[in-house]
Length: 106
Image 1 (tube, rainbow, N blue to C red):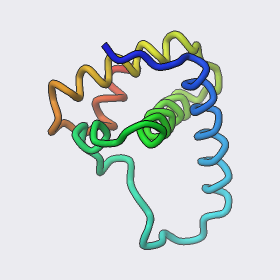
Image 2 (image 1 turned 90 degrees about the horizontal axis):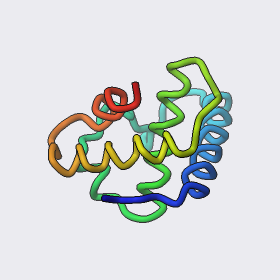
Image 3 (image 1 turned 120 degrees about the horizontal axis):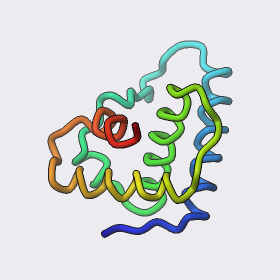
């Protein structure tokens, strides 16, 4: 089972939430580099490595927290959801990554 450093998850989540907030305020119109979280499959996320995967997972955590209307989180719970997501995606690479993450993070 994949284990993340709890401090790294917290730092990446905080960073992602901060960057997403700043980018939303600064964004005027979508550029050619614009991406949609809903377009990624589990396989796309699993192909990422190192810090890229950490950032993608932190953004997913931030997205789910935002949908719940909260900024509070438990680091151990985030790590558990991340592990479950990775296991799920390894078994279901064609599934939509964001939908799978939302289902696991309920």
